[in-house]
Image (cartoon, rainbow, N blue to C red; front, side, top):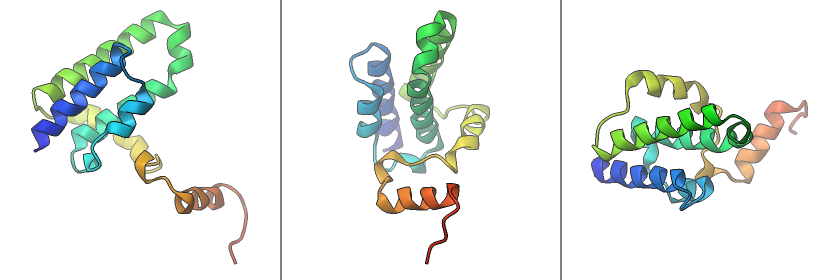
Length: 123
């Protein structure tokens, strides 16, 4: 099953790269159980970073080209059913613990983050 999910995610990434779908649409289409596979989890966060870098991509053609090539590489690895390299997974893991899981963001999550970053006592 994991290989089928990896091929599916690879296709999502490629569709984003050619402009067929938006990053938001790709993230919404991600398999619900992607977090059980570190390679899929890394691909998810790579797409999040891709979207977050939108302004930088518009200003810097070299950065845009390198980022596109990088995502293409990730898509090719997943398409073969291979694991993404451990060092790449490690780079994204730095961001996992505080990053919201987009499908699971709800009011409880939002309020917990709000209370964490502002000084309000919960009664």
